[in-house]
Image: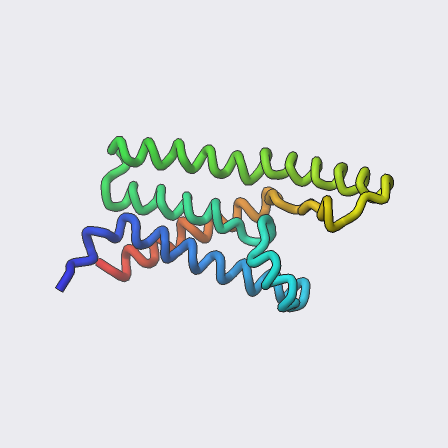
Length: 150
């Protein structure tokens, strides 16, 4: 039998990321209604509550800190990765959404064929509240699972 406990440092963040993705899926479809065609064409959507990316890196950082120690080099790398991912979710993808909105407006004004230039996503980033909730859930679920699995 394989001892999975030595792999918890990475298994937990994967599990937490999946849990947060499921939460996001259900929250999105409770708020916006389930549309099977949208799901088939777009899968899960970027943005929205909670930020699964943020939850995953918060879980990874928590897991590394818990199992490898907060004085380890791995923890420092996890913090750096988390900073980049959270900054991307809050700022870079918001700018991409703004550009998508402006390009969609231009293509609509010019009456350009939508098959040749399909509409761009306008909601690809996260609000601060979505990132905060994702981070908190990632941290708490990871701690809970780590304590349960001890």
